[in-house]
Length: 314
Image (tube, rainbow, N blue to C red; front, top):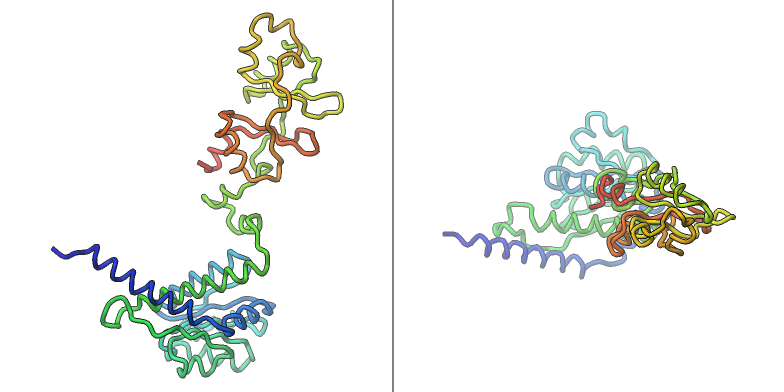
């Protein structure tokens, strides 16, 4: 029986060697490429044919999601009208391991005709693509993982990693934050992880005053449905919280007491601008089900652990 694990390890090892060679060979051309992209007023138009095209789609998507406007243009479609998507305010990032892919000819010619900056990525520095490009990023000579040099494996992995390196270098230069990232990822797990407390919290707050009788506090707890009520002082600042545990501890003569006597003072709170994931971590750590969102000492909202569950944080 074939040793599939050994084959997998050999493939991964060959590709790791290619990535190490890519890393070692990075030089001023990479820095120039980043500067060229930063100077673009329009979009980064990524193109490539075959496996390079599949990698190019991913690179364009990574650029777009990390603050660098980008789109993928298929080179064959470009020859049939999509060249109109590539404007003089754009930059073309063209991928071809050989640098001689015939379907790229019209796109390359278009960039030369309209003085559109062109960055080529290929393994052959003397290829047509690299000779025509304003800047060439040369992939190192590396063995394809298939063993016979036919199947694009190491070369596409290196191209993908180079695209990621460009995207992250651009992202860090622009000081792209998780909040910016969420703007482009409002859905799915990423959107949930980057949601803010203010996005999920409720503003119909369960609140009573310090001197409110416990009969009133119990009514608020029941009506609002969070299992708690906040207690505010005369200035509207959050002074405490009454939870189910507080009710049990003061069961004897509960209705003869006021909110001040029953509440837990200085409760754990969170800012509306904090990540909801941080709020969830607090609730799980303290084994509580609610947090008041407080700004300048005043309650602005309340977040229940069920809100985090509904948002997909868990």
